[in-house]
Length: 236
Image (cartoon, rainbow, N blue to C red; front, side, top):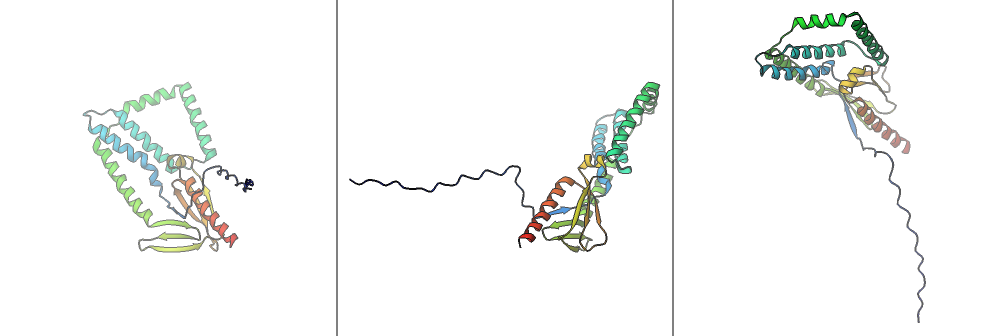
């Protein structure tokens, strides 16, 4: 009778635990497009279309529609006229609240609202649609302009493409300095935008890219690209 000998099996290693956190994307390049400040007027652009439709459907539109449009337009003017940094924004909020309480205590707000109500501004649908068309044309021109003036960050180089003839200036990605700034809180709230400052190696001046939409996402992509390049250099 034959006896079976025990078989020694090598224990299999335990499966590795899945990495914590979100996986890193394999970002090959990212495009940085600086925009003019007129992009923050998108609220007035949309309000003009909505107010134009509402007034075109009514024979006697309420002046409240015009008040709302003027309020949005004034807010857009404030956004592009002043820089609301963190400390400035807090100071402005407290100053406005103080004026409101002081005006309510002195009865000034009641007189002001009564005066504004007596004006009763009116604008017909032709005015709103004209403003909407004017902004639409400007935004189309801005879209075209940003297709011919932008920056591309790659793993080994930084490209500045500009001009209608497709001029390209190349910078090496080694030792490049890029940092993010959010100088205006209201602009960040409206379009999550900010400023990216690029200082290539060997250049005497830095390049300031204003009004980059989605600033935090762009900064993350640039960081991943440049970090992967640095890792490859160290490995080689």
